Image (cartoon, helix red, strand yellow):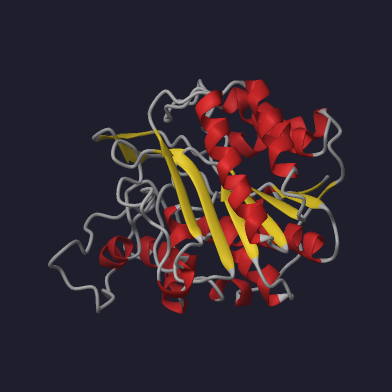
Length: 343
């Protein structure tokens, strides 16, 4: 399986995030991608090469122009105030506050375009996230051109990013950008299977009222888990998209038998949908030792997960999302890919 990867991800290295009521070092860090790449090479998964350049057009097919402009210029505006530390939001336009005006001040913009304080913006963030989208687009292009599968080793991840906001370490929604690009290149229907521990709220919101993208997500119950405000089982889609959104929220402590049952049902729904291509948001923070997650999957379960995904029998693009047990992230992510290939 071809892997697309770029060292540019190292330009984004947030120093702190707000979690559990305190500022602490970011769990999303460059070593995550390093460990996955090392494992790809160690098992001989296949060729590894860099991304092509696609410009902003694919981003604007998914994200608002105002949001992309904000991401491109946020550090410039932040540092112009003499600030050299990471940019983080301070205030959010919650219920009762106005959302029809984008503030002129960078502190206001950060809150307007964010859902949490887990998205530090650094001097290199824009270039890193832009290149992460190029990684997804390059791997997508291989699938669109007839490859059975490809792996986009994206960092930063993307599935919490919506059309006009960032959150949960995510800035540009790589999986959504790739799915839209597949449609723009002739696919009639695309399915997105999100196996990350946290619900892909951004991906769901982007495609919620559409029938040309089915979204299936297996994740921690939002009643007790981030992102808390989306990902419930009664979210089926809206308008033309009704019936094309399927969530499987599982309780803390869920191990493989429970997870497998949800995955099998989600796969059946995707098979019945008969997509022209599948995009897998490949988060492996479902692992038993993940520091910010509560599922109990073992290393070997990811091999089985890959084999089950292969049963969909559609061209498949894997896009890297979460996973924060750095010592095991490479083993678990690559196990899914090896399982998919029947190894």
